[in-house]
Image (cartoon, rainbow, N blue to C red; front, side):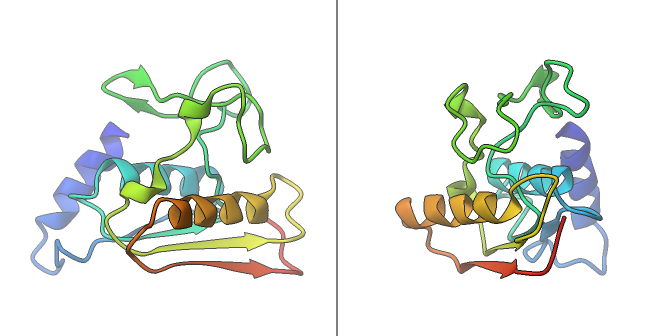
Amino acid sequence: METCDKGLEWLRTQPEVDPARVWVMGGHGGSYGSEAALLEASRRPDLVHGVIAVSPSNSVTVSFPANGRSPWTVGGQDVPFTALFGNPDPADNPAALIPVETVGGPVLAVGGETDTLWPSCPYANAIMSRLDAKGFAHPHEVYAYPQAGH
């Protein structure tokens, strides 16, 4: 996550960028990229003001291929993760849940109901449920596409 921090800090110094309107979005195909986007936005609301999560996860999942490590670090230490791949309720490590309620702006989660790589719609719905339960003040919405995959 340190690399994301440095990139966002640099981006905010660019003259054509409004530093109060920086959003992050998961990369091509989403999934781990969206996990990183949600994690960064929840960790650094001072740098990120909204997030678009495509094929998201509501928790940090074990690295792929599974190696018993987190895919992300903060301060050189593994971010807590779950080994229960594909489970929106990671009973093995509740600390793996991404604290999306700390995001400093709107959250859009996009999932495909025919996603065969991981349950992006159940993950997206879990994100929205957490935001609702925590009284999240910013707009937040799921777009679930019945014919879409990962």
